[in-house]
Image (spheres, rainbow, N blue to C red):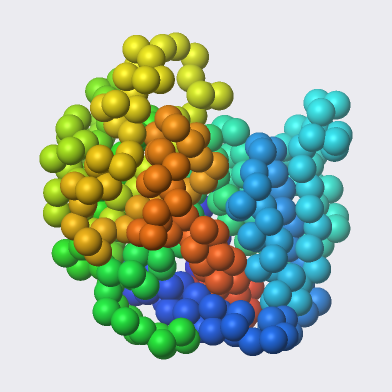
Length: 323
Ligand code: NCD
């Protein structure tokens, strides 16, 4: 495949190929010298029109550890703030010979536009488009779940195992979350059973057609869950009051010490970051032994190495090399 725009671009085999390749990348990251020569001479551009900490740094680290040249472009401080269009920005990147463009854009469909416009020849990786999708986040989340919930593995073992029958509860601001949508799609592909829990105001129209269950009751949705993923309340995307007060939100949809005790012993607590501590997640929950939040960040580097490798390193392609 040439681009990674949506978690739905990946069928089960392609998704497992990314996860298994990421296992191998993770094994190389245990070595003293972490850098591989694989993408020497290739150029990866990080094109960020929206703020990001983890995703941007982790794509940069991933590309550098594969020896690619990396150009970081953030809209702040560039000619975008002078009104330059996505098209002119893309043409500039093309002139610089980008083999891959990792793009985060505030508009849903931004990455798709870049990939299908004909403005650039390289691969496009969606690093978050508006409230739509964030496929590499879903991949790193699945990678993290596989580590904790599917047997015990040695780093580097390519397993081919999916998440069949694992129960994942995703909680909070689903309406504004590209992480939730990409996770639902990928987890469904991998055989997991997903329940979304949110107040009715924070569930998107049409959620009934998504391949998952929905609930308004967090306590009951914690029972039997293997993983509980908390979503950030995205205040910057809220133009209205979606819930009565922060306190009321935390009481009904926040993960706190009492709710931690309702979970099974093996259940992991996830969050894509950045967290609103005290709102959707309490410090006890975020810092508990069952939290994988920091691990998710380091897994992000291995997974993004795998994605860049599979998109750029010739015929060994995520969909079997037909691109
Ligand atoms: C997420 C994002 O930007 O979509 N963060 C991330 O990539 N780690 C989630 C969020 O902003 O809440």
